Image 1 (cartoon, rainbow, N blue to C red):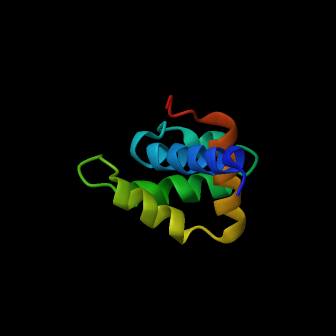
Image 2 (image 1 turned 180 degrees about the vertical axis):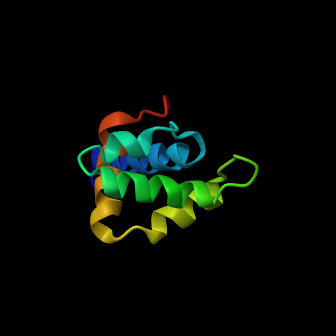
Image 3 (image 1 turned 90 degrees about the horizontal axis):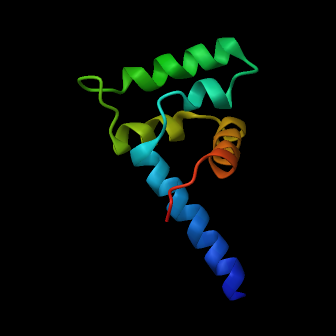
Length: 87
């Protein structure tokens, strides 16, 4: 496999991993801004996984796997375009 592709895949994976631990609180509002009903539903769903107003990496992953494929794709695309782990 081409080294550039490996680097690209590695960076995308690492960026997603960092996002799960350091996501901006308003990412749902930004990612699903065109669908207020879904935005409100997903915000409520993610918040329901919190403990003491803290959303753990495990809780975020639970949220992610509860999304259907289309919404997983939308979130991954949003992360790719809007989040940089700085690594």
